[in-house]
Structure formats: structure tokens, C-alpha cells
Amino acid sequence: MRHFKVGRKLNRTTAHRKSLLKNLAIAVFTHKIIKTTHAKAKEVQKKVEKIISLGKKNTIASRRTVFKMLNSRSLVKEIFQVIATKYLSREGGCSQVLKYKYRSGDGACVSIIKLI
Image (tube, rainbow, N blue to C red; front, side, top):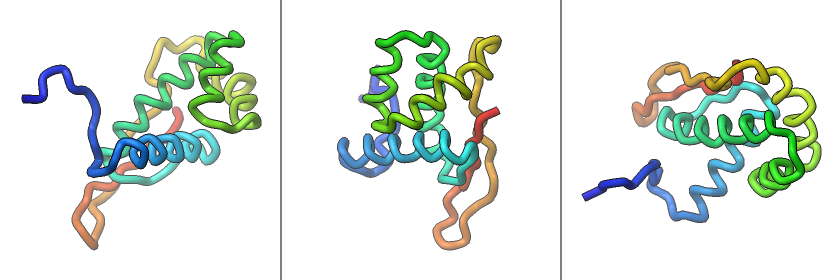
């Protein structure tokens, strides 16, 4: 039984899944909007919300945690100076997942994830 097991495996190994979610989160912050499958979008939304919440704290520890998650100094700088300051007044819900269409090849549900 799957009691208390949170998250989707996405049919990947642990290292591949972590790498995939990290790259998707980087893409969301650099492009502000991306298209991916619905399951991946729901998983990366959790990571994006966590990073923005850390960005709102603006402490050295939160900067180090975000850098550990993203490995990009310029992106960390942008998150703390531009993106997180935009969402200071919001309690949560900084990203949005919208169903877009079904892929013609395999019928997978494609979604758009974007920063509000």
C-alpha cells in the first residue's frame, strides 16, 4: 500500500527524476512559462512554490538552499531581487498549471505552467 508516500515517480530513477524537476524549475524561472505533461507540471509546481517561498524570506540560509536547488548564481540573484519581491504580498499560489491539449503522438495531457 502507498500510505504516506507523496509525489509521482514519473517512471524514472530517483537521480533522473531529481534532475528533470531541477531542469524544469530552472526553465520556469528563466522563461516564465513552459509546456510539459500534466504530471510533470504538478510536480514542478511544488518545487517552484517552495523556491519562491524561500525567496520571500531573503536570508543567507534561504539563498544557499535555493542555490543548492538550482546551481545558478544569476538565477538565484534574479529570484531574490525580482521574482520574490513581486510575490511578497501573496500568501501562496505564485504559479499556475493550466491544461493545454492532448499530444497527438501518445495522447498525453500537455499542460502549461507559468508564474502568475
